[in-house]
Amino acid sequence: MKPRDLLERIRRPFASRRGTSASARREEEDLEAIAAREQRAFRYEALAAATRNFSEKQKLGQGGFGPVYRGQLADGRDVAVKRLGAGSRQGAREFKNEANLLSRVQHRNVVNLLGYCAHGADEKLLVYEYVPNESLDKILFSAAAAPPPTTGSKTHSGSSSDGDRPLRAELTWPRRLEVVVGVARGLLYLHEDAHTPIIHRDIKASNILLDERWVAKIADFGMARLFPEAGDGRSHVQTRVAGTNGYMAPEYLMHGHLSAKADVFSFGVLVLEILSGRKNSSFIPPPRSSADNLLDYVRTSMCGFLH
Image 1 (cartoon, rainbow, N blue to C red):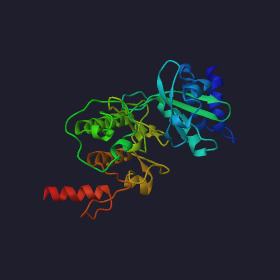
Image 2: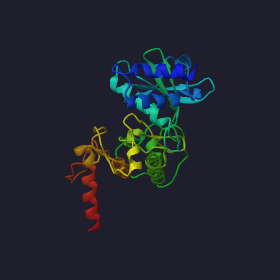
Image 3: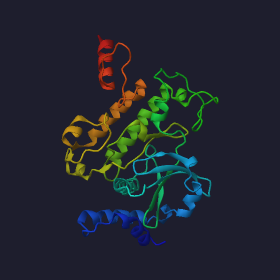
Image 4: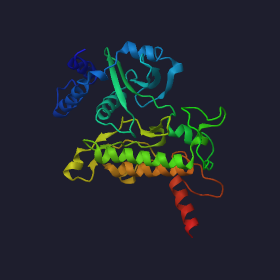
């Protein structure tokens, strides 16, 4: 299939009926650049076969714009396939946004977009590297908070080390530190080293994937935003608020002031969750604590420790 034909098939469901604005033309040019990389175009039949016709048994979870399936390509590579949900306008926007942004980045700590597929008018799929150890939240919050082991253990992809030991037990202090550093490096790349700065807007444990070596990878760019204004010296932009309660910076949540600092705030909440093993968005205070959320709990605990 020629790149321009592929572009048209990707673009058609999202085309505006009110003509083509300058911003829409820029989006089309971005997609054309993506389509020019023909090696990133997957055949629908190949992805259907890889996922056993999108079997429920192959389903890894539900993403922002549709289900995610595990698949194995004909060459033996394991992949994760995101399938756009039928009739989802928000999902369609997030699909296009994620394809556009992830085509621009390549970093060890950012999930790798391998390609995509446009089949007919409705079938839109994104193909990613498969990350065996699932998302950080499923491991970190799988049991009641407890201090992790201080020694490392043999790493296995997506399973316990001895058949009955929970994967969470392998999230040792050194590994937690590696996860924190990995996410920080990924954010630094997005904010400062990418061709155009990118603000993720939804940094949280469920959007951090861990591979078989416990390397952290930032995922789910459906809410992310390019931030070219940074090159003009602007500190922030005014925009519609998007994100997850409990992780959004106050100035962004209340006033819509978006900057890289919004991701840094979310990252700070994530660090507290990794260290404490407690989830901020559904925080339950321990006995003898009156804290309403994880941040208050840490603040009062630190005051007690320092005094």
